[in-house]
Image 1 (cartoon, rainbow, N blue to C red):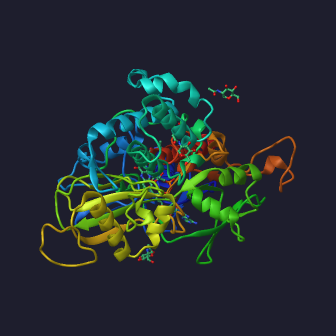
Image 2 (image 1 turned 135 degrees about the horizontal axis):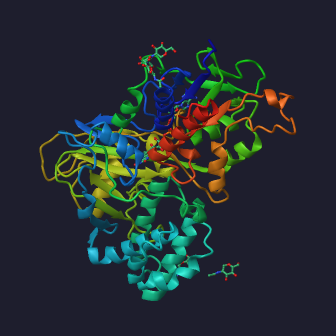
Image 3 (image 1 turned 60 degrees about the horizontal axis):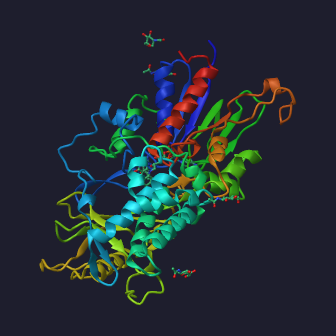
Length: 515
Ligand SMILES: Cc1cc2nc3c(=O)[nH]c(=O)nc-3n(C[C@H](O)[C@H](O)[C@H](O)COP(=O)(O)OP(=O)(O)OC[C@H]3O[C@@H](n4cnc5c(N)ncnc54)[C@H](O)[C@@H]3O)c2cc1C
Ligand SMILES: *[C@@H]1O[C@H](CO)[C@@H](O)[C@H](O)[C@H]1NC(C)=O
Ligand SMILES: *[C@@H]1O[C@H](CO)[C@@H](O)[C@H](O)[C@H]1NC(C)=O
Ligand SMILES: *[C@@H]1O[C@H](CO)[C@@H](O)[C@H](O)[C@H]1NC(C)=O
Ligand SMILES: *[C@@H]1O[C@H](CO)[C@@H](O)[C@H](O)[C@H]1NC(C)=O
Ligand SMILES: *[C@@H]1O[C@H](CO)[C@@H](O)[C@H](O)[C@H]1NC(C)=O
C-alpha cells in the first residue's frame, strides 16, 4: 500500500481548522496523514471566548460581519450556537441609544451628531464603492453627492476623509478648526481605526477599500460564543490530530528528499511532511522574515517577502471593566484637539482616541471599549490601577459623573467604581503579534494574492531552483492560509475560513480526490 501523503497544518485557528476539517471529511480519513500543530495551549487563535464577571465575552473576533451568505453564520446555525439562555456580548444593540459627551463636560445633542455621522457614513460608503447601492441615500446628502468627484485622487482613507470633511465645511460653514463637528468627525474616524487596525488612517490604502467585500444583512454576535464555531469544526477530527503547545520555530523546505519539508519545534523535535499549510498571522510572518533566525529556510522568495513587508498589520485590543452599577449608558466620547483650551489635562493620551464606552448588553455591569494602534499597544503595558484611573477620569470629565478611583469598596450608589479589569494583549503575544491585516498605502490586493501562492513556484521549463531537475520538484510544499491571504475578505473570520477551504481544495485537487 502506498504511503499516505503527510500533511501538516501550522495553527489551530479558523483557517487551520477549516482546512483540517475539509481534508479529513472530504477524503474519508483515507487519503492523508494529517496533523495540526498549534503553538498555544488552546484552539481558536484570534477567536477566544472568555468569561469575565460571570458574563460570556469575546477577547478576539466578536461579530459575524453580515449574516447573508456568511459561512461562519452557516456553521454557527448548524452548531446551534445562535441561541443561549445566558446573556452574551452585544446580544442587544445598546449603541442605538448611545449618548454623546464632549470634553468640556457637556452632552452633545443628537441634532449635532447626526449630520456628522451621516456625512461620515456616506463618505465611507463612497470609499467602499457602495455608491451605486446607496445612491439614493447619498444623493439625499447634497454635500457629498455634489462633491463626489474631488475624491477621485485620494491615496489613503485618511486623505479621502479629510477632503470630504473640508468639502462639507466649505459647503455648510460648519466644522471650522477646533469645532465640535470636527471633533465628532474625528470620533467616527477613530472607530474606523478599530475596524481596520490601521493606527493612522493616512496609511490605509484608498483604492483597496473598494475591493473589500461585506456580506449583506445584520451583523450579529454568537450566543454560545465564537469559539463554539471552532469546536464544531474541530469535532470531526480524531483525538491526536491537533497537538497543542507545539510551536514551530523553523520551516525547512525546497529539499529534494523524499519528505521535502522539515519542521523544527521549540522543544527541539523535528517533523517531516510532504505538505505544510502555514496559517500563522501576518504579524508572525513579518517577525519571521525580519528575525536573524529566519522562520523559513531557505528564506521566502522576494515576491513573497515583499508582500509580507508591504501589507499592513495592526493592533486592536478590547478592554472590559466591571463597574459598580447596572444601567450605565452607552457613551460616545468626543475629545478636543490638542491645541484646544477646553482640554482636561488629567485625561491620559491613550484614552483620547477611544470612541465609545458601553455596556456589553443592557443591564450588564461590564463595559467595553475598543483600542487601536499606539493606544492599543500602550493598554497592554498599563497596570489595572492606571486603567481604572484613566477610564474613570475620562467618564467624570466628560459626563460630570462622580467616580471613585482605585479599587475601593463602599456602597455609595451615586459614585461609579470599577471593580474588575480585563484586556486583550494581541500585540505582545508572540503567537499573534497584532490583531488583523489591512492594505497599507504602497501595497495592494495583489500582495494579498501573492501571500496566498504556494511554494515552490514551479517552472518546468527553466529548471531554476535548488533541485535542478524541476520535474522532480515536490509541488505544494509550503502553502499559505489565514485571514491575510484573502483578497476581498481579509481581516475576518470568514476570510480565514475561505482561505482554509481554498488550500484544502488545492491539495484535494492535486491528489485528484476533489469528488
Ligand atoms: C480584537 C479582535 C477583534 C476581532 N473582531 C473580529 C470580528 O468582529 N469579526 C471578524 O470576522 N473577525 C474579527 N477579528 C479577526 C479574526 O479573529 C481573524 O481574522 C481570524 O480569527 C484569523 O484566523 P486565522 O486562522 O487566519 O489566524 P489565527 O487565528 O491567528 O490562527 C493562527 C494560529 O497559529 C498559531 N501559531 C502562530 N505561530 C505559530 C507557530 N510558530 N507555531 C505553531 N502555531 C503558531 C496561533 O497560536 C494561532 O492559533 C478580530 C480579531 C481581533 C484580534
Ligand atoms: C468511508 O469510510 C467508511 C468506513 O470506513 C466506508 O464505509 C465508506 O464506504 C467510505 N466512503 C468512501 C467514499 O470511501
Ligand atoms: C483514521 O485513520 C487513522 C490512521 O491513518 C486511524 O488511526 C483512525 O482510527 C482513523 N479514524 C477513523 C475515524 O476512521
Ligand atoms: C500546554 O501548556 C499549558 C501551559 O503551559 C498547560 O497548562 C497545558 O496542560 C499544556 N497542554 C498540553 C496538551 O500539553
Ligand atoms: C486627479 O489627478 C489627475 C492627474 O493628476 C488630474 O488630471 C485630475 O484633474 C484630478 N482629478 C480631480 C477630480 O482632482
Ligand atoms: C485649520 O488649521 C490648519 C492648520 O492647523 C490650516 O492649514 C487650515 O487652513 C485651517 N483651516 C481653517 C478653515 O481655518
